[in-house]
Structure formats: C-alpha cells, structure tokens
Image (cartoon, rainbow, N blue to C red; front, side):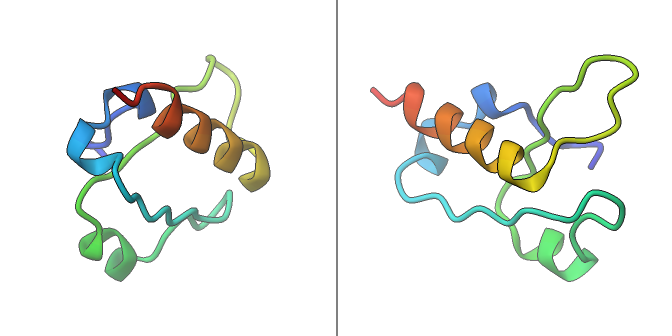
Length: 70
C-alpha cells in the first residue's frame, strides 16, 4: 500500500496488542482485509528482492513490534 509504514515506525499505540495479517507473496491481502486494518506496514526490501517468505516476514514483524516497546 502506498501509505504503508516500515515496522520500526509503527506508533506505540499499535504495539500494545497487535493483530497481524500477512498476505501471500503474489496476491497479498484482500482489499477487505486491508480496509479493515488500522495501519498498513511494509517491510523494506533491498533492490532486486521481490518478497519475503511469510514465516520470515512474521519473524521480522514480531521482532520489530516487540523490540521497540517502552
């Protein structure tokens, strides 16, 4: 999504009890799933890398959402 933020920029209020929705590599999430979310997050990728495996993306997201708690 054009308005997606990187995981390290997720505001504190969204880190308390997050619910993650992870999409498949090609189709991603449905429009309904995106519309129901409070925030879209996208993991920055190195140029030439198309996507992460969903397990790797989950690990990155969980790390980022818990590593920056205050």
